[in-house]
Image 1: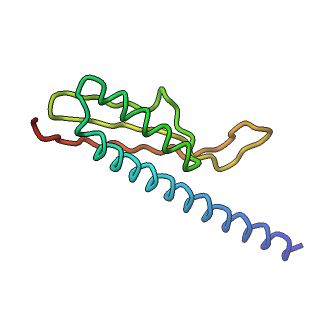
Image 2: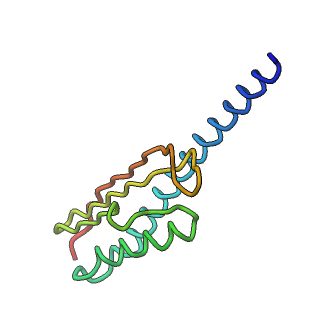
Length: 116
């Protein structure tokens, strides 16, 4: 009985490590996506730049396998200051299609863009 208990503890620890590592990976992936998209779109017309950046972030994250919510992704363009805020949960335990336990993640970055 002790062996079964310690095997379950070991499996739980491995799964906790795996979930943490995947959460860190998703944070680094979103961070990279935000950096790339802003660098590419910084030269775009200011009129629709924020909307295009948000759209590109959502598309690239979905292509990477990270589910971002449109309502939790905010991009603001205030003159030279360009701010991106992304919040998303990384599911740890799911049961019957519902997420029971998730790690809340957030990436916020302000970019100072050069004047034209």
